[in-house]
Image: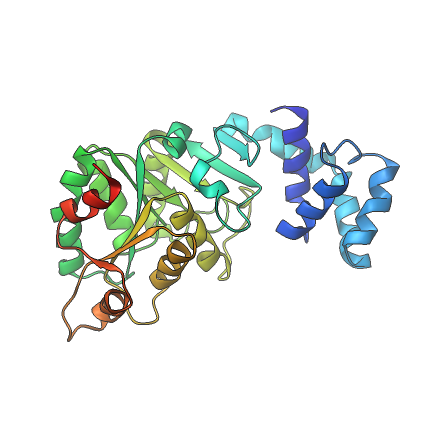
Length: 290
């Protein structure tokens, strides 16, 4: 890790830090050359509240945080900043893209092939699973990389079916890489860390919080050419991912469902609002200009 990346990663670990704060610091000190000297002590109070600035200044002088960051490579964790060539090019086009991605696995997946986000209900039914099993072989054959959130239900099925079909898949998690949630998907996550890829915008020792789950959806859609929704209730979190995709001008696909099933309410509403109704892999692939 070069000196600038180390400094940006250290800044990213400071308590109370957020996207806008890092942006303001980089505006005043683009190379972060002043991070560890008295100049930064003057810059920080202008950006933070007094309590936050005290925490940041304490963390900037924490040898423990620096040592923690150095240990990441020994654990197979790569830190990819927005300034690195490995950073997903599509993600740079989104609103407030993460300054840093923490990744474990094959990082070449971030910028190779065509990415399709696949999300849906945590209470997936047999219908949702069969839809994935029907569509995925052709998608995988054409080199599509499946992106999902390693959640229960449709997410987990999507990752497993991609692997089963000898395809590639990326998991985007809430919280850090040391705290996989839900516990039921830990084995799947560890397998993906070896042969696929798992990423997070949070430092590895961050425990998942409720607010992080909708936030990570912007990354799922942000690194993908399109988003496929398979089963979702009317107020499902999957619709947040679809909304992010729409805001970024990406394709949104939806599998139609039984009008009597609550797990089809969200997908059917998306179709009414203009999402492309898809019944086969070919109907997705034709939008990707294969």
